[in-house]
Amino acid sequence: MCGIVGYIGSRDCTEVLLNGLTKLEYRGYDSAGIAVFQNGKISVAKSKGRLKNLEEKMEQENSRPFGHVGIGHTRWATHGEPSDVNSHPHSGGRVTIVHNGIIENYKELKDYLISQGVTFDSDTDTEIVAKLLDYRYNGSPIQTISATVRDLEGSYALGIIFADHPDQVYAVRCESPLIVGVGENESFIASDVPAIIEYTRDYYLLEHEEIAVLSGDGVQIFDSFGTPIQKELKTADWDVEAIGKGGYAHFMLKEIHEQPTAIRNTISPRIQDGLPNLEECGITPEVLRRFRHIQVVACGTAMHAGTVGKYVIEKLAKIPVTVDIASEFRYRDPLVGEGDLVIIISQSGETADSLAAMRLAKSLGAKTLAIVNAMGSSIAREADMLIYTHAGPEIAVASTKAYMVQIAVMYLFSFELAFALGQIDEAECRRLIRLLQQTPDAIQSILEHKEKTQYIAASLINADSLLYIGRGLDYALSMEGSLKLKEISYIHSESYAAGELKHGTISLITDNMPVIAVATQKALMEKTISNIKEVKARGAKVIMICRSSDDIDAEAVDLMFGLPDFEDILMPMIAVVPLQLIAYYTSVLKGNDVDKPRNLAKSVTVE
Ligand code: AGP
Image (cartoon, rainbow, N blue to C red; front, side, top):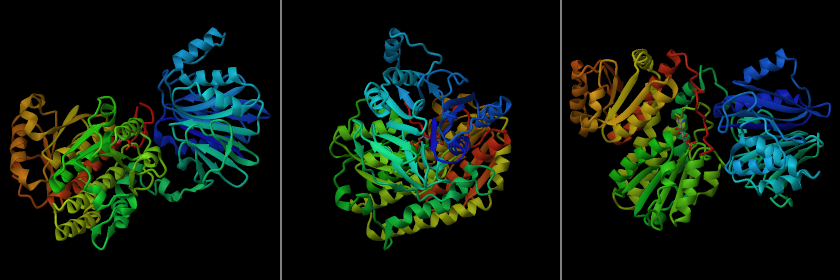
């Protein structure tokens, strides 16, 4: 999604903006631009494509602005194709803005402005906001912003500069995230912490319709009526190292390797005397005994983590769990209410559909529990109960370590729930916790012997399409393996419940459709092997992910990745690692932009 950076201070503003935007590249974008006050006038440079295109363009045209106040933007196209003209910043004349989000009533506003004689250059909803601000401008930026945002429907974070206020940067938000960084004699606005952490760790989190004014005197914040307010200054505890590649070729590879540490950081504070303890998250045995049904709502990888959770909760705690895609849940009149627990899983905590689904669940009377990685994000702030995953910043668009800790939390939660409901006794709960604590070592052992995954990836790069199959927890895991591969390798793939193949999909099998079979559940092993034989008999090349110790008929498979032996129920945490690595190496071998796959954004803050 779009990224915003703004700066006021004594540094070279263009450099700060470009540097900050580089740190937001992980969010996904297709064009970039900046607006900087140069000798009292606003100088704009923008370009379709990557930030390096913008830098090249400024160099070629000798148009790199120099100044100390400005705003910058990376755009992920929603209204209008990626192009120079649709790139931000957009100007309304006296007002220049950058915008993240979607203005839903843009058509109505545009018609009104056209009727007033205003003209437009771009196809964006953002230009309408710039023109509306300019149309309303009465010399008082705060009054103008406050009056204008009342007319906007949808989501927005705006960075704004006024031509006649060359010593100030303004910001306002509704739904889309925006922070205000406070340094020594300098201030920043940004969509996310990585953009500013090099300069300062102190920041304000802007809330709904709050307006920030950055000037030489520091930062002032006003409520939506223009009344000054005091806010708590937060401190980002992120390690600057954590947002660099640390010697790895890509963030994704680094993040895959960070998984053992991420699991330890996430589970250790929630285990006391060998038993799960989620009290600090508002979850006690008494609270857990109130629920008769659990609904998990999330998107993409987070939804797949919820699907693993469903199998584990139902197996151990014997409570029915339904899993829904947030964009479906929010529009299908869901039957949740009092007595239901709705779990929202999100790495970013800002996914628009997940946030809306959570609000809906709350309005229907359900209790909400958020499992979120990004501290202070909207979902984290609004949920009734909250479990932070401590994965640290995840930069690669393809989620790996966030998924890992999401499922680690689902295990912790399931163990505590099953124990609270008397479905497992204390000894069993302790045993499961001990096993969970051993998963980082098992994952480490895979990471130390990962070469085979490169070999498997090399065998896939010419395939047009792939199938991932499995049963039970292995099916839940195949969904994630398949998504990982398709999002970064651009090879089509589907995950299928192995037993369902015969009901239609097996007709697709040819010798150019490899099948990745995940088989870690002992009770289902024979059944999965029968399905493997069925696809093999129809020409498929079969790659099997199972325990090294499994006695597999060499004739039945073409390639195999052997996993360390571990308890069935926890195998998803182990088996996902080769699936992540296979996707990673396939993307690398195809020469793709692994960390920033085409058309994708890290944080989907619009519907
Ligand atoms: C994962 O690799 C994807 N990039 C995507 O499916 C992601 O998990 C999804 O958009 C949800 O994001 P969230 O966890 O930040 O809510």
